[in-house]
Each structure stands twice: as structure tokens, then as C-alpha cells.
Image: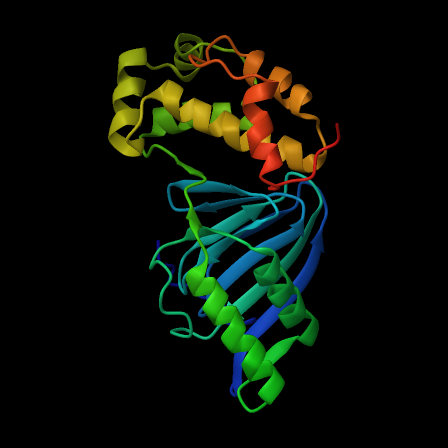
Length: 260
């Protein structure tokens, strides 16, 4: 979704290819809806970001970053403390990434290139070292693997109310019928709205939300067993069985640090 009221405060100035920002956010902080005149890469070296853009919501743990094209309206919520590192790239500098927001896998080298760019502060077109750093960044951004870690929100107002109730507390074991009763709408209407607007049935959509929540808890330091019992097994509405053993392969991939 493009935004007319574009902020250019952090965009690269004349002679600068990449501008950067480093910020420490407390738990619960919300960055209101906004857009930039430059392409943007937001990355948290610590903590989890919940980013919303149009009907999509992403939960971004370390080892992932979100690519936001120039003009795309978005807002950010910090469920816990977040150490954010942001790159603002002159439009057209990176040509091989999607025209829409996309989650990218951050390799160890891409992480260090991002951190170094933020340390430098801005990458100027006439500085040899900064140009070399910029070119390496662009190369690794264009090779980064997109990761489909997001959920789409329904547009219909009553279905959206049901979706927001689930997002507020994914571990709650309320049935769809109970959620629909709270929203004053029939189960059939909600199922139809979810399939139309998100491309998935309600329970499949809720499973994806719970998986996102599991990643958030693992990043925050919860053990695999705590996450499995607290988010997944505690919910009888989940139609697939998930245990600590099922979550363990994700932890081993190194997307988070988790205590035993």
C-alpha cells in the first residue's frame, strides 16, 4: 500500500547512497503508520518486531529483516525490547528485490554488513570504502532468500474483529463459534470472509498466527517445551499436533537463541 504523506526525514541526502538509523525501543513501543521516500531494510539485532503493512502482518525475529519499498505505508509494534538497525537506500539502488514488502533471511555476513553500515552512519558516493560497503550490501540483499512469514488480515469488519481477538492472545482456546458469538456474527460468515480475504480457512490462519507467536517466545528466551505447551498444545482448537519435538528442528536452524 502506497502512502501519500511520505516522510523524507531519514532518506539519503545529496551525495549519499545509504542512510542509516540505530534505535533502542522499550517493550510495548509502537511506531505509528508512516512511509518513507527511500527503500528501507529494517532489522533487529535483538528482539522481535511486529510489522503491519496494509492487510499483512509480519513477526520479524533476529536472522530476518523486512524489505519495505519506497512509499509503502507501515507501522511497527515492539512486543518486547528491540535493538533496531535500519538502512534507507536511495530508490533504484537495489533492483532485484520484490516491489512489495518481503521478509528476507539475514546471513551472518549480511548482518555484519548491516551493522557496519549503521556504525559508519551514511554511505557516501565519493568515499571508496563506503562505496565498497554499499556494493557488498546490495549484492547480498539481492541474493537474500525471501521467507513467507506473515499473515493476511481479513478486510470484512466483523472478520477483522475476530482476527484481532486471536492476534491479541493466540494461545486462548476459544472456539471459532465462541469468537463469532463475541463479534455478533455467524461462523459461516466468518469462514467465508477468511477464505475470500486471506485465501485460507480460519483454523489454518490461526495456526499460522500461533507459529508466529511461537517464534516470538523462542526469541524472548522461552524453552521449546514452554512454547509448545503454552501456545500450541494448550489449544484444543488446533487441528494438527505439535510438540516440543516438532518445534525443535526450527530452533536448530539457528533462527533464535533458546535456553534448554
